Each structure stands twice: as C-alpha cells, then as structure tokens.
Length: 255
Image (cartoon, rainbow, N blue to C red; front, side, top):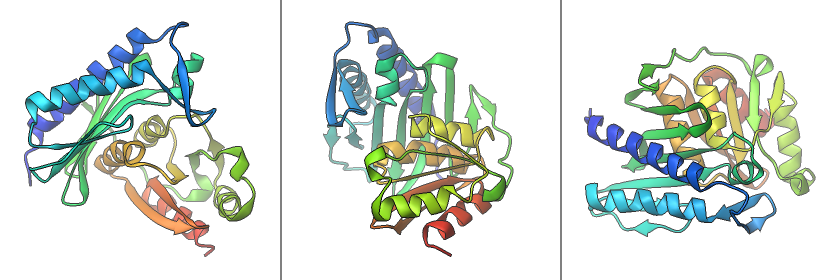
C-alpha cells in the first residue's frame, strides 16, 4: 500500500489555507459572476483560493498534475493529479449561508487516493481515502452503518428546469424510494454528512471531478461505497451506505 502520510498532511494544509483565505475575502463587496446559471457562481475568493493551492502544489509537488474548477491546469509527469475545488457551494458562500467548504483530491491510476475537505464555519477538517481511514480533526470517523434506501436520508441536487423529461423522471423514481430528502447546496459537505452518519447516501447527476472525488474518497475511507451509473441520458454519482448505494443505482435503472 502506498504511504500517503505526507500527501494527506499536505492536502490538509491546502484545504485549511484555501478555506481560511476564502472566508477572509467573503463580504458584502465581493462580486459574484454567473457561469452557467444563477446558482452556478464564481467570485474573486474562488479564484484566489485556487491560486493559493496551485502555488503550493507547484512548490511541493511540481511533477504532479493539477485540475481546478476555476481553470487551473497542469499536465502530470508523475502519474498523479490533484483535483481542486476552492469553494464548493459558492451560491451558499455568496448568500451568507454556512454550507460551503474547500476541497482537494489526489488521483492516480484512474482511482482516487485521498480527499481533504475543510468546513470553515465548523473549523472541521476531514481527510481520508480508500486506503486511508477517514478522520475529522484528526479523530477517526466511526465506521459507516449500512442502511437500506427506504430508511435513508438522501442528499441530492437537481436544477428546477430539469424536473421534467428523462432526467426528472429517473430522479423522481430514485428519491421516491428514500425515507427523506435534503438539498443543501454543497455536494462535498453533503458527503461529509454521509461519512459521519448524519445522512446516508448522496446522489447527483453530471457531477464534475472536483465535486465528486474529495467526498467520495472520504466516504470510502469511512467504509462506504461510491459508484457512477448512467440513467436518463446522464451519469449519476452515488456514494454512501453500501446497501443504499446499490438501491439508488437500481432505482435509477428502474429495477
């Protein structure tokens, strides 16, 4: 097994510093720009936090690749790539809500090695991966309890214009089998709730790598499962309690 101790420590420092910087820049004068919709925003804080992370990686991991939500890109010569989400939940960040975070993941050989997430509002730092037991502020998370979808709290997101048509149809079928539903606006923080047993499964379609990999890594490090499956013409990302993950995928496939 690869020793990820140094990488995990670096990842923890990266997200803590990025989150602290974004939080410092947050305020009434911060201008938000639309990317693809009124709920898909970017600010100078997002860009500054991403630049901080990429500058650190250029110094400490110059051979590793970089992919960032706000456009950072560097080709890997090591076979490893860092995936960066400087502010996940930018709409919440702009609106003064607290459900946002900074996140990174390290990927190699077509799989995620580790994820790190920092939630400034709670001063909560999460680190973990498939071969790295997940922690919150250095304390091991309790192993995830398996649960059926019918007994599960499901976290998700779907833009209102997509409630109709094939995507809305499979979405409705899937959420209709859950015990209860939450839409909170940061997929990565939703994943941290799942990893801690506060929710049980996360499902969302067309999720970018930076919105998927950090959370999926930490869920897997807590004993959960993470899968991607196609339904309704889009790819759905599902992570959480293994039985609930299987049942979400079955519901999406209409089984």
